[in-house]
Image 1 (cartoon, helix red, strand yellow):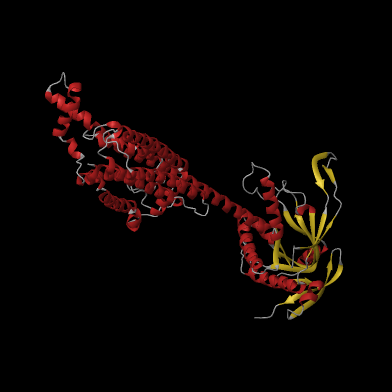
Image 2 (cartoon, rainbow, N blue to C red; image 1 turned 90 degrees about the vertical axis):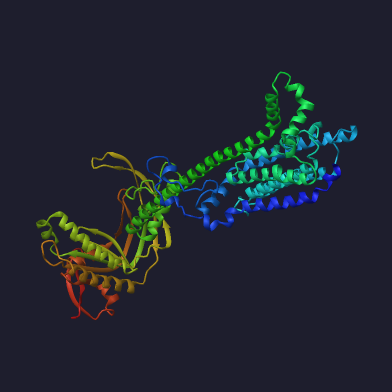
Length: 615
């Protein structure tokens, strides 16, 4: 028999190759038919994640029974997540497999050593069997090392390859142990006779297949577990018996009724059948002998069921994780959108540099306050650092200020409904805002009632800074009692860069002309055409933020007063400029009408009306 078994090696190698091809084809099923299996592009962000019921019911991708999600991109992501989530389980599974196989193999090796020494029947040490056993153990060790290296390799973002390595390792282990079994199947374990009908199945259960049970708690997918189960049946229960049958040992033939009864008559009859009928005795002996094989089928089927249940839990956890990620991303996008809207509102109220200063300081304040979420409302700046614009003055030279005012607004507003007046002002000022937005030299300061203030050439970039002495004292109410609040005196003056005074003054006059044309397009609620006065003056101003609740960015200085006087002393439908502005723009416009007006606090001033050319 040993001579016959020695000739089986080549046939075993062929069986390994054929089994390997079948295993590879099954494992690569997803890759080969990926395009056919890909049935949807599931996006959690596009589904209702906040409806009634559980998250899984409201947003769950469709799945195949064993092959996973119909969205194969999502399936790849699940496998990557599975490899990372089950890292410890996979590594522990390798360690358990190494220990269990090393324990069973050393016991078998010890039995063969005793067999050589004391001449046990069927217990003969064989170099080929020893080499196959060492290879089977080495496969686990190499697989463990490979998985550790993959997990530690940060340049490899996808750890999904660990699953394929694990499947390949267990499959290689079954090939090596299957080859060893084909060499030793006639030698039943621990001194059992070779003619025992089920001795080779006992060998599989107690020696070769024990490490495979670690697959149960490694958290592999049901498809991977099915692959290993099919490989187990194919190698141990099909290929090996067929190969050894070619060599002259009929493994399944030992399970025939004649061989079972013959074995029972020789070894078990007196032990079981003393008080039984012959029919019951035959049935009991068959059941007793075939039980290990039946248990193999039951255990493998149980492993499949457990793997399906475990995978369902893993997929549910993965889906919940994706839903949480989608909800988090949706919340972050909503917060980001809200932040952008708030920053846009701030940028529409303050010049860009002032707005950026406000936003940066507000964000710094919020980082120190864990309870604050998002930007606080623009109307409350009390938490902003002291040296924000309210305590910093910016000096600007040669800027041009424009005032507009609606002629007859007071009498009109007394005779019209308030919401009609509001709608009229909204339409008019929206049109004027578009004019401001069309020229980068212009900046809208404020609207008060029917009046609008625009500045040209206001550069807020700092050229130099001068620190002033700061004092802090409690404010007092009109009754003379302290209010408990603190007031700060100005502590810093910034001198800003100068814009081109000629181009900025020209932009201001152009805006005034365009504003006249825009106003002429509107009709007041009382049915009269809208007409405005425009006053312009050029000079130095100081800018800063005033107030802590609903703060305003304001300009201060005599230049503002003079520009306002240019508007009030002007005429409807005409641009009225001071001499300072005229000196900067007289060459840019053809005709001017000189005049002299009395200005409160200034006396007689030489001013100019822009004369529009007849179209």
